[in-house]
Image 1 (cartoon, one colour):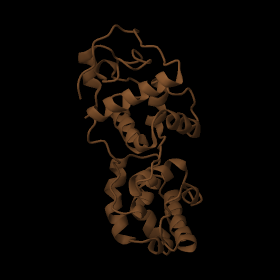
Image 2 (cartoon, rainbow, N blue to C red):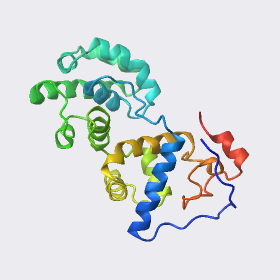
Image 3 (cartoon, rainbow, N blue to C red):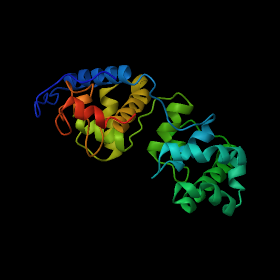
Image 4 (cartoon, rainbow, N blue to C red):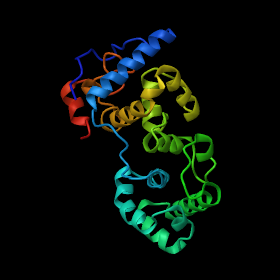
Length: 242
C-alpha cells in the first residue's frame, strides 16, 4: 500500500456537500482501496453457500481466523443441512467451544439446518427475504452469503464498514440498515460486495477504531476525518497491521 501524502494535522478536506460530489468521492475512495488492497476478499474459508452461511453465523463476537480454525472439522462432520439438523448437541458444542458463546452458536446452526430442511429442501436460498427468516440470520449475514456465495450484490455493514462510512462522511448514522442505504445511494450495485471487502480490509489494517493510521492512509486526501489518528508518516506506518 502506498504511503499517504504528508499533511498538516487537522487539515481535513471538507465533507462532500452535494449528492454528486458525495458519489464522486465514494467512487474515488473505492478506486484507491481497490489499488491498495487488490487481494481483498471474504476472509472466511468456504466452498459452498451452506458453509459460508454457517461460518458467517459463527463469526459473531470472534475473529475470522478463529472461525477458520474450527470450520474444517465442522464442515467435515456436518456436510449438509440435514446433518446439522440431526446433530447431537453435545458433539456440536464441543466442536464450537473454541469460539465462545458455543451453546448459543450450536443452537443457531442446528436451527438453521432444521429450517433449511423444512422450508428449502436443504438448500440455502439466494434471497435476502428468505435468508433473514432463518434463525439467527440478519441482514449482514444474508448480504455476506448473497454477495460471496451467489454473486448477488450485497452491502455488508459490519463494525468496520460502519466506522469507515462515518469517517468518510458517507453517513452519520449508526444503525446498520441506514448505513447500508447510504452506501447503496453512493456506489453502483456492481461495486457493493467488493467495496465492503475493501473497507473491511482497510478498517482491520489501517483505519483502526481507537488509533487510525492517518499518516499511512491512501485516503488521506479524501477523508474528512483525517487527523483523528496518528498523522506522522513513520509513526502511522508502525500502526498498520499486516
